[in-house]
Amino acid sequence: MIDPVIFSFKLFNWEIVLRWYGVLVMLGAVAGALWAEREIKRRGENGEVIWDAMVWVLPAGIIGARLWYVMNNIMGGSTYYTDNPVKILNIPEGGLHFFGGLLFGVIALSIFLHKSGKDMWLFLDALAPATLLGQAIARPANFINQELYGPPTQLPWGISIEAGHRLAQFSDLNRFPVETTRFHPVFAYEMILNFLIVLFLFWLSRRYEKQLKPGALFSVWLVFAGLSRTFIEFFRPDQPRIGESFVSYTMLISFLMAVAGVVMLLIRYGKLGLAMAAGWEDEYQVRQAEKNPRARVQPIAEDVSDMDGGVVSKAAKRKPVTKAKASGKKTAARKTEPKKAPAKKAPAKKTATKPKSKK
Image (cartoon, rainbow, N blue to C red; front, side):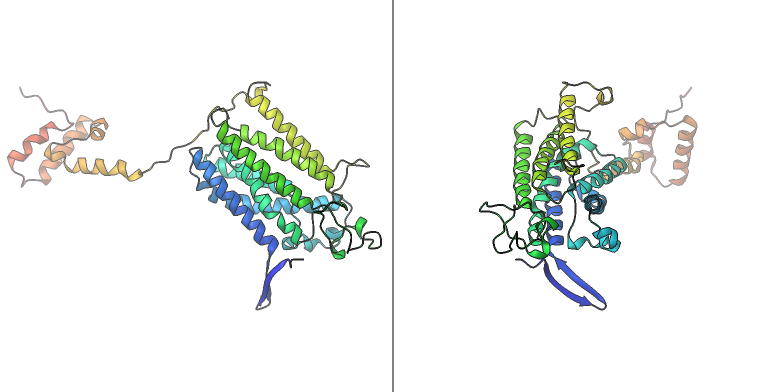
């Protein structure tokens, strides 16, 4: 098996450890952000904003993913984290839940976009495939950590799980010998499904680009991401069940997520009417930033400096100037420039000030 630790060393009293889990999670996050940046640019927004958003989304997502995993573990009857609360902080050992990261990440993203005045639907449509891409890239870390596997199987792609990483129901080595017992590689199933959904969403966003309204791609993502996770939960014996049923809490949430996606699509295309969705935008709200904000200041400064030569800019003509102030400026100009030749003063009468009538 692959060693979960790439390398480690001591720095004073601190032990620095680089694990495959952390490397692959960060690689997935960067790959997802690069995908999102490209999709945001394609929709007319500044793609570099995603890197500012990552400062908010990534820490919040990791915290949410960890907390959801811990709560899920406790609900399943485990006392590992209740007996050792400090272990909750030991994220490198593994244990992040996608839904917790999604929930906290969306909350952080919405706060960031609200503060920066960006369109939420634009970013959700761009980020939806990116989340599955990042998750798929990080999934091999579960294999290295010997986690996220299913029940025993006779299929040729089954994987071996060491005794120290077995779930309680598979810890009996007489019934499930290490040498011959193989388990469903559930992490691989989810990784493959994620890649397929990403490809489908990519094709859909290009093939029906003009027909897709804001929020439609995110709604489709909800449907497929929810259904795929519902399917995966049938192979997850480690997930806590609702009562004595076969339904896990994660399975229920996944199914509801898919239902929400279907409802949103029906609302989006007028098949279902809801008063709260009446103002749903038909186009992305993109705020065009100034490409060259200094360009507005420079012409005015040049025109003002040339006013004595008879050149008056349009911006100067639009500026309301009272007669009293204008005449005062004119008098001051004549006092401060006594050395100018009379021939050069004549064009100054063509300025924006109203000349006095001669009787």
